[in-house]
Length: 390
Ligand code: MTE
Ligand code: CO
Image 1 (cartoon, rainbow, N blue to C red):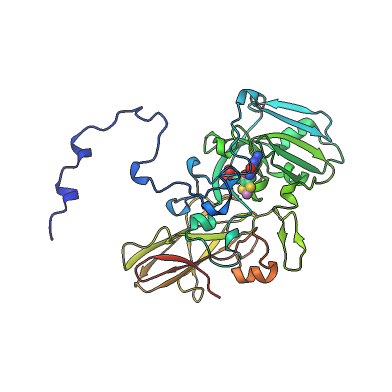
Image 2 (cartoon, rainbow, N blue to C red; image 1 turned 180 degrees about the vertical axis):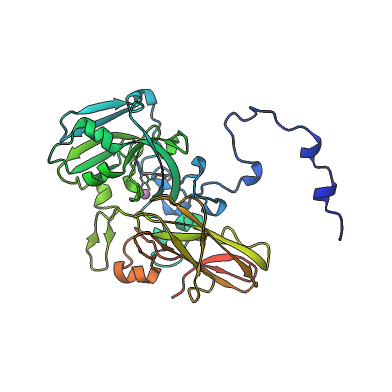
């Protein structure tokens, strides 16, 4: 039928000549045709790249794991270049025994593997006052989902012996910003990890090599990278990152503080502004991710008409606690415009709110903890745009 397809009838170079041998790339890199899957920043967001952020290309990814080279970066003082031979982790304060661990010391503790998402509290922060950035990479890309190998923080604290008054933990980074956050002891003893591997290999420098704190389900700012010190105390320290920053100023002038848990959220990653529908009418795959800091995601709903009709999406892939989940919704597109949204339900029964529902309660002062439902308008050509509907 029709003209012969040269992709079948012609002999392409990769069929009539040998390719590279093994070891051409001792550390593998993506295909040159997959060059769009890169982190990107929004230049006007920050004054310079040292204290800045770039974004995970969610629209290029599938499944639930974020490849190490694509995990968004958020640094307050640049990437610390820590020499593992000079790496030290100190535990001090209200403990029976102050301890300093080398990296070699840490490697002799029992380790565990867990998949967790890290979401910056400022993810979607630019969208509080209305639709702004055109692409899920920019609206939702301050998230990554990684399998960590690490030591339960509880084991190290038990070794030091937390004293009776030890109700809080200060975690401090070794970078030039000396990032410091107060963490309640209950959380520290629950599921936090002192992690040294991500997706099987050493942490990337950008992600805190050689050691970072993993604080499952809680805002990314607390996941101290280049972890150098843990101090046990009897009350929080009220550092900059828990007073001036990472607090949510309400309309009445009061601020919500210590809003650590990340509420359930989801986003359609394709179609989306950076991933338009290019095949025209017919069978169309809608996909996206959903997550909750309080558990798993048993259900996601998708609407094609701005919320008039909701359809239950198909979850696919492992459902880990405090991890990203993947959903799909396949349908026959008739070529008419769409208002695409997804809505996550988490295992506590919580349902992701609309942006207006959030604003009614939290006002528009804050940039943090925006987990409202995202809308993509898709036109007849399949092009998508970030919009809001009332
Ligand atoms: N830890 C240190 N030491 N320095 C930092 O600047 N940034 C925090 C947190 N831990 C930061 C840090 C913030 S705000 C976030 S969102 C996460 O690290 C980002 O982690 P990532 O760079 O692996 O994406
Ligand atoms: Co952050």
